[in-house]
Every structure is written in C-alpha cells, then in structure tokens.
Length: 91
Ligand SMILES: [Zn+2]
Image (cartoon, rainbow, N blue to C red; front, side, top):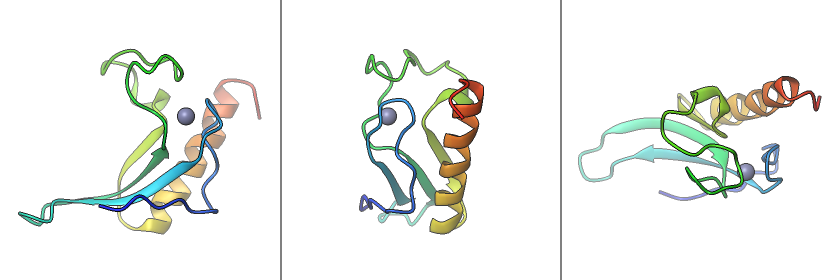
C-alpha cells in the first residue's frame, strides 16, 4: 500500500499539510476497499484536527473513503476541502 503525494490534491485545510491518495486493499485476501484520500498528518486525537474520538461526525474528518478510482478519490478530497472551508467560513 503506497502513499502517493499528488500535486492535484489540495492540502489539508486544517493543518496545511500535504494530502495523500492511496488504493486500500488487502494483498493477502485481495479484499478491495477502494481508493481513499486525506490529510497525511491526521490521526484521531492528534490535538490538531479537533477530532478526539471515533464518534466524531464523518464529515469533519479530513479523509474520504471507498472511492472507485484514484481520480474519484482526488475529486472527493478536493470537494471535501472546499465544503470544509465553506462550513468554517474560509472559502
Ligand atoms: Zn491535516
């Protein structure tokens, strides 16, 4: 599972770090979880992203999941960034 920093990805609007996009699959049983993208620095309770537990609403998490292609994941992430900025009046 490789991390790819793609220049098409908007940086994280919360911490400003680079975003990643990757294909999430299990090479052992070949389960395919699709493409995901998100903040490369984010983890739950990191004290930076304002999300302290796994019960936080999905739309506040700097990560998008289960996309069908790399391009879909990039588009979904960039859309998430735009919506986040709108919610937080930074558009
Ligand atoms: Zn971030």
